[in-house]
Structures are given as structure tokens and as C-alpha cells.
Length: 54
Image (cartoon, rainbow, N blue to C red; front, top):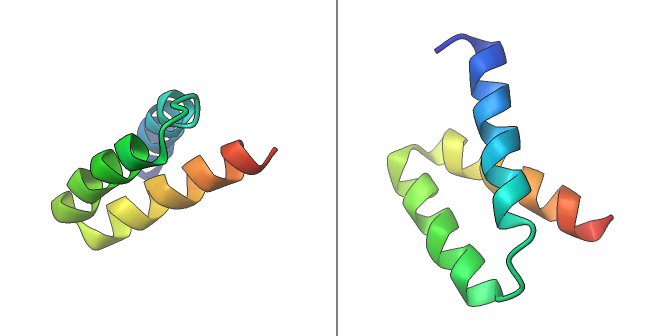
């Protein structure tokens, strides 16, 4: 994937996860992304936290 495609993917995943009210559900999903790749998981996690803090 190109960097732009990766950014869109992370943004789309984070947008959906940021709307989840249960932290345990968010964490469970983030664990799957971390397992797929440490950098990938960190990017999704950072994006989710950024959206939830707004």
C-alpha cells in the first residue's frame, strides 16, 4: 500500500473505533491491529485517541 492508502485506512478504522463507548472493546480491537504490525497498531491507536480527545 502507498503511504496515502495507509493513512486513509488508519483514518477510516479510527473513525469507527472512536465512536465505540466501551474502552474494553476498543482495546480488544487495537490488540488485533498491534498483532498485525507494531507500527500499524500504534498509528491506529494514536488516531483513535486523537479523535476521542476532541
